[in-house]
Length: 256
Image (cartoon, rainbow, N blue to C red; front, side, top):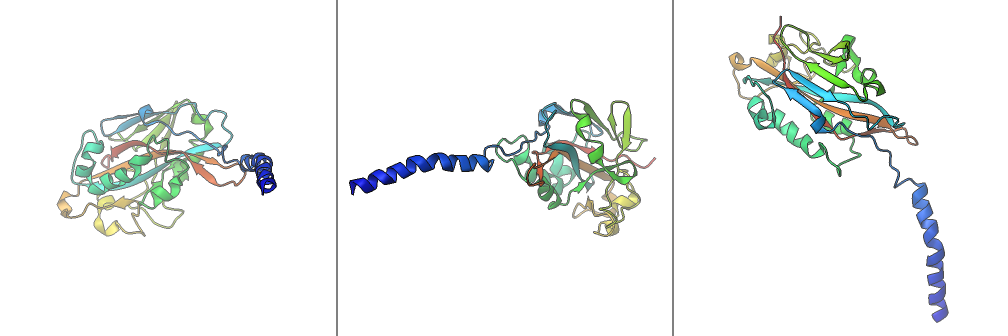
């Protein structure tokens, strides 16, 4: 009996290092990490500007690929000079609901390695595009690390992104031709953009209505934008994501 206990203990002593080596080989302690843009590094101004300071955390990170921006447009009756979480519900209750769904992930140290594509698209968010409707990934690659992204939704111009001396007009998506935004793909406040008849999956799928308002009250539109870092797992080649940060809720300028 004593001999049996001795051999069982001996087996544990020899097997334990092998088990630890197995878990180490599986990379459980080395899951790839990409870093978000901290919310404290984003500076919104009024309802038409925001500066995003991209930190250098991902510099030299072989897993990092680029940043993406998720957006959704909200119809409103309310002109808000300085949009913030305290007045999101006044702008559009769905804006507040969406923000509350994303808020636990912002600057979180525990809710990491979450599939942000699924999180945002399930709530009706889309990928922002730039000039000509191209994806913004090539614009927001490693070349923007350590730089400032300047978003401008000022009047009498098409909303745009400035990076140094370069300017990029911001475009709505058409989901590779699966819907046809009206009146066009620019972030401009128009009757066609707000028209309830156009708020269907085949046309303005990226715009959400505000319930219970009359046609004459539907005068404003806002866009919420969140930025996420994206990388690629070196062995599985699956996309991995940072936690999100809210860039701002911009009021779309009127047609000019």
